[in-house]
Length: 209
Image (cartoon, rainbow, N blue to C red; front, side, top):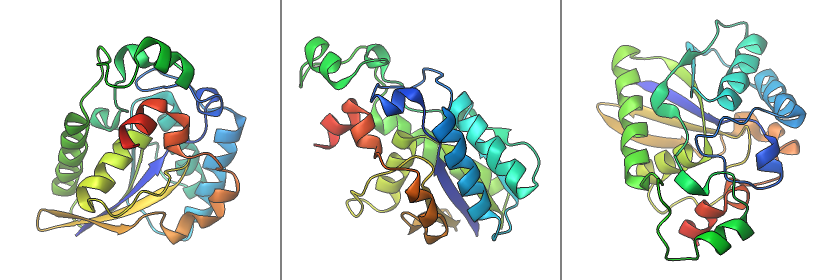
């Protein structure tokens, strides 16, 4: 059995002002760095084998801060953990989105959710083959984690995915199962993470509404 602990990156300025990020490479702000450090201190009580990360800087820096806190090597970059591409909606606020692309309008360049799910689940399976019996921290993004949650436990969890939240999964005999949405090991980090992903990203809020 391989276990995955999917971590959403810390806060960025675009999160704070609720602009759609997607594959736009927006760095952590000071709050995000504090969230990552707090989570790293919480995770010290668990023995992990590997830390991997999306290539975007907000995820990579979150993973590096956690790795430093745990005394582990630098994270390995996994391209398929990158956030969903929101195409021409990236950089938009909710008001911008409604003005440019009213509900029901296609957003040019937006990645289909099914594609996000397929690549995210595939890369977890690939890592499980390469690292059987490992406990792996994977720092990714809200839409990626939401897609994996919905795949492993369809319809069961509508709770918010906050910055630096942890969601644990097991993968055994080719079956991916959700172990804990908001794993108890990271409850203390909620003191720093007040905003939920769907509130920060109006495309996701619209699609899940």
